[in-house]
Image: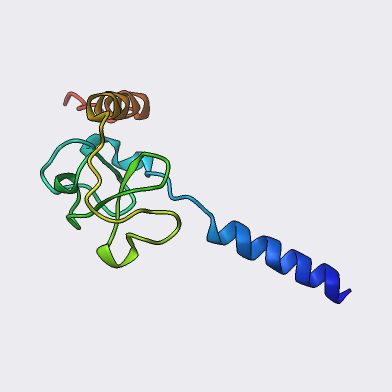
Length: 108
């Protein structure tokens, strides 16, 4: 019984320790804006996108806005990420905005 508990505990601990952070799609409209309007956990292509001034590589080549104090947690690789495929990332974010339906509506 103790062995089962220990094995389960270790498995859960290891999976939590290696959890990767992925950019929150709700912030797609601010990806690549460069005006510091992106919230923490939103996607980014450089530090200029983030209100925290910290765009961290999530360990999978994606930028995610982070607090500087948390920029090395959960697989993130620190502030200063510059997306080498920024144009493609911005285009994908714009497509996500269209999919979400965040278009300006006309007043009736």
